[in-house]
Image: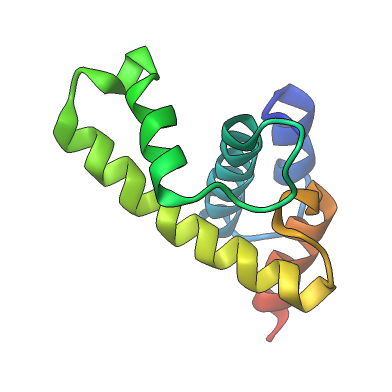
Length: 111
């Protein structure tokens, strides 16, 4: 899954409230970033050291150490959410799909 127009349209087509759709887009983007960090050989989320290296190699954020720290904190939060969801659905975190993320968000909104 990459965050492209099709992904955004699929999220926006849900009946989720706007804030939940925004959270879902962010979580999907984090999952895509984790996949990029991990490469094709791992199904586990990358550890903190690998996340830091990846962030520091992103030209858009590397020049701002404060932002890198903020981004790493947000990635840690997303990782926790993705690990929890992966346990719930019996998958490895990087094997989660957009449909898994949407189903979990819709379930949370119904309860």
